[in-house]
Length: 634
Image (cartoon, rainbow, N blue to C red; front, side, top):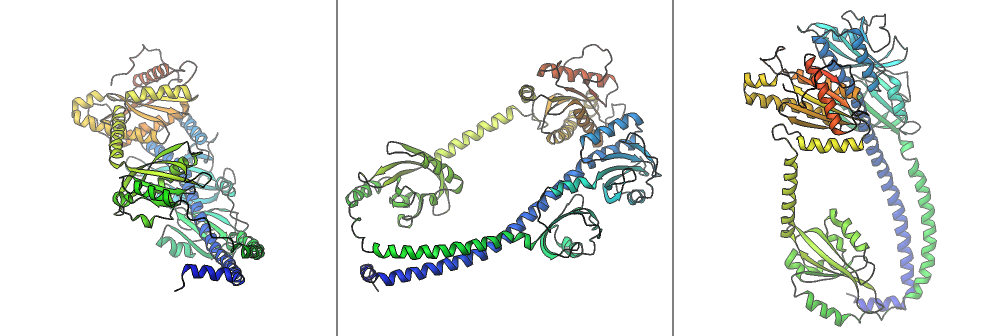
């Protein structure tokens, strides 16, 4: 076998051969790299397109769900209300108008009688026509299913525009058909949203019903309304609700990559399609540029080869000056418990002390030439890099903590102290690091931090309901008053709760409190506010950036959901548990937290004076009543 010295002499004596081999090797490498890059980039572009298309399909499916969910919740509340009550037309009309204003996707919302005529509507006047012949009306009339029914697109008899219709059955107390709640969404609502996404000249986005009927397609195609006979609905959706495939488009016949996702809640299907030509257009441009760059690099390699031929003769004198000093370093480093590492300024390890085998079970020889970051947990590498970047001269030093692994896979914490150093004046800079095992110290610190965090959480949480407590409410409300121009507070009281406890016992009372707290907490979570157990059977909710009108809507929704719990209350006239709610919003007369709570408390007192099981806003007309206590009794 040829020794390194013999090989070195052979190179020096035959520079032309070496340069020729170098040029051929570089040319082969460049050509191979160009071909490899073109192939890899082609696959990467298709894989990226698949991810992008599926991500967009997922986002659009969530958008469709969110668009339908808010009207669904509102319609459910209306259907439950109309099951038990017959609201006055003027008051219910105002409620519907407010709902349309708060839900921008809705064009209108209303209620149909059992014969298809209009009972209520958000429009200024009730439409005179009957919708009894519509598919959705017949569906609800003949089916007891009370889930939301999505249909369309139909041409609105009111506006003449293509419309997606959301409907929900109203049943009376005996379960008989009592009408339909109907909400209309313009097809353009989705089309304009889809238009903002770039899918290429031949791309498309479609929203379809579970049966294959096309609700919306952008760009619009009017020659095909249903895709129920396509492989997507015949087989693919049966196997997976989410997918990606290549097919010929049923709309324009162009071969496209299609990503789809079906909503598990509403059954709607979103598809995103892009043509192969659009996906690979940038790849073809890059391929041309890479070919040009490869040609230029080949010329540069030839020029460098000429220079390289003259450099083989200059190489033999820079490897003996650090041996004595390195011997001293080894003597010191190999006889201490801490790990000593010497690396260049790029972090490549040139020396590792023998103590690494004792501390981590790793042979030091296997680390030479590797980067220091190879020893560092990936989540801690950025902190190590920042500390290293702060080293400017040999007078400074840095310390950083990071995680690593022993050879047996055990995770340990190390603390590294490192600084710049020079083996000799004028020589290259090196980084000297001393690593110490601080695993036990870190565990004790983490245990202390976890205990402090748990104590802090317990101090601001109500033990029975899991909601925030009065202390958290006071601090949150003060901060919200200082930082938000619009702010609403709800004070909630369980009606006749003392009678509930006296009749059914305190254990039943605690269970009632927990169930109502769950409703209030879940409703508040959707608004970004704070739900609190205010004391006893009283609760409070803080809603930043919510005006009084919207806060009243939230409060009414809470009341309806509490009623829906159907908790029996033998001591109450109604026979079931209800709540009363007072609502107040930040204004010139209630600009601080104390006055805001006072206004909400007065509104709650009004609600109880007016018969309980209702919501009263502080801006509503009031009867003259004596000032109530801060927390009204049940």
